Image (cartoon, rainbow, N blue to C red; front, top):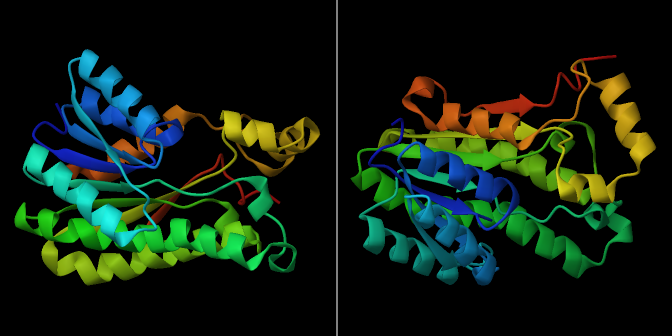
Length: 250
Protein backbone atom coordinates (compact mmCIF):
# COMPACT_ATOMS: atom_id res chain seq x y z
CA UNK A 1 0.00 0.00 0.00
CA UNK A 2 1.15 3.51 -0.88
CA UNK A 3 1.44 4.88 2.68
CA UNK A 4 2.24 1.74 4.66
CA UNK A 5 4.30 2.62 7.73
CA UNK A 6 3.49 6.34 7.53
CA UNK A 7 1.64 8.45 10.08
CA UNK A 8 -0.57 11.39 9.11
CA UNK A 9 -1.61 14.23 11.43
CA UNK A 10 -4.85 15.73 10.07
CA UNK A 11 -6.35 18.88 11.53
CA UNK A 12 -10.10 19.30 11.26
CA UNK A 13 -10.05 15.52 10.95
CA UNK A 14 -13.46 14.76 12.44
CA UNK A 15 -15.72 15.57 9.50
CA UNK A 16 -15.77 16.80 5.91
CA UNK A 17 -12.51 16.82 3.99
CA UNK A 18 -10.56 15.83 7.09
CA UNK A 19 -12.59 12.67 7.55
CA UNK A 20 -12.33 11.87 3.83
CA UNK A 21 -8.55 12.33 3.96
CA UNK A 22 -8.34 10.02 6.97
CA UNK A 23 -10.37 7.31 5.26
CA UNK A 24 -8.26 7.47 2.12
CA UNK A 25 -4.94 7.41 3.92
CA UNK A 26 -5.96 4.52 6.17
CA UNK A 27 -7.08 2.59 3.09
CA UNK A 28 -3.54 3.06 1.75
CA UNK A 29 -1.91 1.78 4.94
CA UNK A 30 -1.25 4.94 6.94
CA UNK A 31 -1.91 5.47 10.62
CA UNK A 32 -3.80 8.70 11.27
CA UNK A 33 -4.31 11.16 14.09
CA UNK A 34 -7.52 13.15 13.75
CA UNK A 35 -7.01 16.49 15.48
CA UNK A 36 -10.17 18.49 16.06
CA UNK A 37 -11.88 20.83 18.52
CA UNK A 38 -14.89 18.48 18.35
CA UNK A 39 -13.38 15.57 20.22
CA UNK A 40 -16.57 13.49 20.22
CA UNK A 41 -16.87 13.67 16.44
CA UNK A 42 -13.17 12.91 16.03
CA UNK A 43 -13.53 9.87 18.27
CA UNK A 44 -16.47 8.63 16.19
CA UNK A 45 -14.44 8.93 13.00
CA UNK A 46 -11.41 7.28 14.59
CA UNK A 47 -13.60 4.40 15.80
CA UNK A 48 -14.96 3.98 12.27
CA UNK A 49 -11.44 3.78 10.86
CA UNK A 50 -10.32 1.31 13.50
CA UNK A 51 -13.36 -0.89 12.86
CA UNK A 52 -12.36 -0.99 9.18
CA UNK A 53 -8.99 -2.38 10.19
CA UNK A 54 -7.03 0.87 10.30
CA UNK A 55 -4.92 2.56 12.95
CA UNK A 56 -6.39 5.86 14.11
CA UNK A 57 -6.67 8.06 17.17
CA UNK A 58 -8.60 11.21 18.00
CA UNK A 59 -6.81 14.11 19.66
CA UNK A 60 -8.52 17.23 20.96
CA UNK A 61 -6.84 20.28 19.48
CA UNK A 62 -7.60 23.94 18.80
CA UNK A 63 -5.00 24.77 16.15
CA UNK A 64 -4.98 28.41 17.25
CA UNK A 65 -3.59 27.33 20.65
CA UNK A 66 0.09 26.42 20.36
CA UNK A 67 0.07 24.51 23.66
CA UNK A 68 -2.84 22.34 22.54
CA UNK A 69 -1.11 21.69 19.22
CA UNK A 70 2.12 20.69 20.96
CA UNK A 71 0.19 18.30 23.22
CA UNK A 72 -1.69 16.74 20.30
CA UNK A 73 1.54 16.23 18.36
CA UNK A 74 3.20 14.67 21.43
CA UNK A 75 0.28 12.27 21.85
CA UNK A 76 0.55 11.29 18.19
CA UNK A 77 4.29 10.68 18.28
CA UNK A 78 3.95 8.68 21.50
CA UNK A 79 1.28 6.48 19.92
CA UNK A 80 2.73 6.02 16.43
CA UNK A 81 6.43 6.81 16.83
CA UNK A 82 6.48 9.91 14.65
CA UNK A 83 4.75 11.94 11.95
CA UNK A 84 5.35 11.77 8.20
CA UNK A 85 2.40 13.67 6.73
CA UNK A 86 0.72 16.83 8.00
CA UNK A 87 -2.56 18.02 6.51
CA UNK A 88 -3.53 21.52 7.60
CA UNK A 89 -7.24 21.22 6.92
CA UNK A 90 -8.84 22.95 9.93
CA UNK A 91 -10.40 26.26 9.05
CA UNK A 92 -13.28 28.67 9.49
CA UNK A 93 -15.26 29.07 6.28
CA UNK A 94 -18.83 30.18 6.88
CA UNK A 95 -20.34 32.87 4.66
CA UNK A 96 -20.08 35.33 7.55
CA UNK A 97 -16.38 35.63 6.71
CA UNK A 98 -17.11 36.47 3.07
CA UNK A 99 -18.16 40.02 3.90
CA UNK A 100 -15.98 43.14 3.62
CA UNK A 101 -13.55 43.64 6.49
CA UNK A 102 -15.51 46.66 7.68
CA UNK A 103 -18.65 44.60 8.17
CA UNK A 104 -17.06 42.08 10.52
CA UNK A 105 -16.29 42.53 14.19
CA UNK A 106 -12.56 42.72 14.90
CA UNK A 107 -12.91 39.70 17.17
CA UNK A 108 -14.36 37.64 14.31
CA UNK A 109 -11.52 38.68 12.01
CA UNK A 110 -8.96 37.77 14.65
CA UNK A 111 -10.59 34.37 15.22
CA UNK A 112 -10.59 33.70 11.49
CA UNK A 113 -6.90 34.45 11.08
CA UNK A 114 -5.98 32.65 14.32
CA UNK A 115 -7.44 29.42 12.92
CA UNK A 116 -6.81 29.72 9.17
CA UNK A 117 -3.34 31.26 9.34
CA UNK A 118 -1.79 30.96 12.79
CA UNK A 119 -3.14 27.41 12.98
CA UNK A 120 -1.13 26.42 9.90
CA UNK A 121 2.00 27.93 11.46
CA UNK A 122 1.44 26.27 14.85
CA UNK A 123 0.87 22.81 13.42
CA UNK A 124 3.65 22.92 10.83
CA UNK A 125 6.25 24.05 13.33
CA UNK A 126 5.07 21.58 15.97
CA UNK A 127 5.40 18.65 13.55
CA UNK A 128 8.68 19.73 11.96
CA UNK A 129 11.02 18.01 14.41
CA UNK A 130 9.22 14.67 14.16
CA UNK A 131 9.26 14.74 10.36
CA UNK A 132 12.91 15.73 10.32
CA UNK A 133 13.81 12.81 12.60
CA UNK A 134 11.96 10.46 10.23
CA UNK A 135 14.12 11.64 7.33
CA UNK A 136 11.62 14.11 5.87
CA UNK A 137 7.93 14.39 5.25
CA UNK A 138 5.08 16.19 3.58
CA UNK A 139 2.94 19.15 4.62
CA UNK A 140 -0.27 19.75 2.69
CA UNK A 141 -2.23 22.94 3.28
CA UNK A 142 -5.86 23.43 2.27
CA UNK A 143 -6.29 26.82 0.64
CA UNK A 144 -9.23 27.87 -1.56
CA UNK A 145 -9.98 29.30 -4.99
CA UNK A 146 -11.38 32.27 -3.07
CA UNK A 147 -7.78 33.22 -2.37
CA UNK A 148 -7.26 34.08 -6.05
CA UNK A 149 -10.19 36.30 -6.93
CA UNK A 150 -11.84 37.58 -3.77
CA UNK A 151 -10.88 40.24 -1.22
CA UNK A 152 -12.96 39.19 1.78
CA UNK A 153 -11.38 38.25 5.12
CA UNK A 154 -11.85 34.54 4.32
CA UNK A 155 -10.24 34.94 0.90
CA UNK A 156 -7.29 36.88 2.31
CA UNK A 157 -6.76 34.18 4.93
CA UNK A 158 -6.59 31.57 2.16
CA UNK A 159 -4.29 33.78 0.08
CA UNK A 160 -2.04 33.85 3.13
CA UNK A 161 -2.09 30.04 3.25
CA UNK A 162 -0.65 30.05 -0.27
CA UNK A 163 2.07 32.40 0.94
CA UNK A 164 2.82 30.17 3.90
CA UNK A 165 3.08 27.23 1.53
CA UNK A 166 5.90 28.94 -0.36
CA UNK A 167 7.58 30.17 2.83
CA UNK A 168 7.55 26.78 4.55
CA UNK A 169 8.58 24.95 1.37
CA UNK A 170 11.68 27.14 1.41
CA UNK A 171 12.34 26.96 5.15
CA UNK A 172 11.79 23.22 5.54
CA UNK A 173 13.57 22.09 2.37
CA UNK A 174 16.83 21.36 4.25
CA UNK A 175 14.84 18.93 6.42
CA UNK A 176 13.60 17.12 3.28
CA UNK A 177 10.05 18.25 4.00
CA UNK A 178 7.94 19.14 0.98
CA UNK A 179 5.13 21.67 1.40
CA UNK A 180 2.26 22.08 -1.06
CA UNK A 181 -1.36 23.20 -1.02
CA UNK A 182 -4.68 22.43 -2.66
CA UNK A 183 -7.12 25.18 -3.63
CA UNK A 184 -10.57 23.58 -4.00
CA UNK A 185 -13.18 25.33 -6.08
CA UNK A 186 -16.94 24.98 -5.66
CA UNK A 187 -17.52 21.62 -4.03
CA UNK A 188 -20.57 19.43 -3.63
CA UNK A 189 -20.37 19.53 0.16
CA UNK A 190 -23.10 20.17 2.69
CA UNK A 191 -21.51 23.37 3.98
CA UNK A 192 -20.95 24.89 0.54
CA UNK A 193 -24.41 24.10 -0.74
CA UNK A 194 -26.10 25.32 2.42
CA UNK A 195 -24.34 28.70 2.25
CA UNK A 196 -24.98 29.52 -1.41
CA UNK A 197 -28.24 30.11 -3.34
CA UNK A 198 -28.92 27.52 -6.03
CA UNK A 199 -29.05 30.03 -8.93
CA UNK A 200 -25.56 31.23 -8.02
CA UNK A 201 -24.26 27.66 -7.90
CA UNK A 202 -25.75 26.86 -11.31
CA UNK A 203 -24.35 30.03 -12.87
CA UNK A 204 -20.92 29.37 -11.42
CA UNK A 205 -20.79 25.76 -12.63
CA UNK A 206 -22.18 26.38 -16.10
CA UNK A 207 -20.71 29.79 -16.93
CA UNK A 208 -17.45 30.15 -15.01
CA UNK A 209 -16.02 26.63 -14.96
CA UNK A 210 -14.66 24.66 -17.89
CA UNK A 211 -15.82 21.36 -16.36
CA UNK A 212 -19.55 21.84 -15.86
CA UNK A 213 -20.20 19.96 -12.65
CA UNK A 214 -19.68 20.50 -8.96
CA UNK A 215 -16.44 19.28 -7.51
CA UNK A 216 -16.55 16.29 -5.19
CA UNK A 217 -14.72 15.08 -2.12
CA UNK A 218 -13.11 12.48 -4.35
CA UNK A 219 -11.57 15.14 -6.57
CA UNK A 220 -9.78 16.72 -3.62
CA UNK A 221 -8.89 13.37 -2.03
CA UNK A 222 -7.22 12.25 -5.27
CA UNK A 223 -5.12 15.42 -5.31
CA UNK A 224 -4.20 14.90 -1.66
CA UNK A 225 -3.07 11.30 -2.25
CA UNK A 226 -0.87 12.41 -5.13
CA UNK A 227 0.76 15.37 -3.39
CA UNK A 228 1.43 13.36 -0.23
CA UNK A 229 2.97 10.44 -2.14
CA UNK A 230 6.45 9.82 -3.50
CA UNK A 231 4.97 10.28 -6.96
CA UNK A 232 5.09 14.02 -6.21
CA UNK A 233 8.63 13.94 -4.80
CA UNK A 234 9.79 16.70 -7.18
CA UNK A 235 6.95 19.07 -6.29
CA UNK A 236 7.12 21.59 -3.47
CA UNK A 237 5.94 25.14 -2.86
CA UNK A 238 3.00 24.71 -5.24
CA UNK A 239 -0.74 25.24 -4.91
CA UNK A 240 -2.80 22.86 -7.04
CA UNK A 241 -6.17 24.23 -8.15
CA UNK A 242 -8.95 21.63 -8.06
CA UNK A 243 -11.65 23.81 -9.54
CA UNK A 244 -12.94 22.52 -12.87
CA UNK A 245 -10.90 25.07 -14.79
CA UNK A 246 -12.10 28.12 -12.89
CA UNK A 247 -10.86 30.86 -13.25
CA UNK A 248 -9.37 29.97 -16.66
CA UNK A 249 -12.67 30.53 -18.48
CA UNK A 250 -13.74 34.02 -19.55
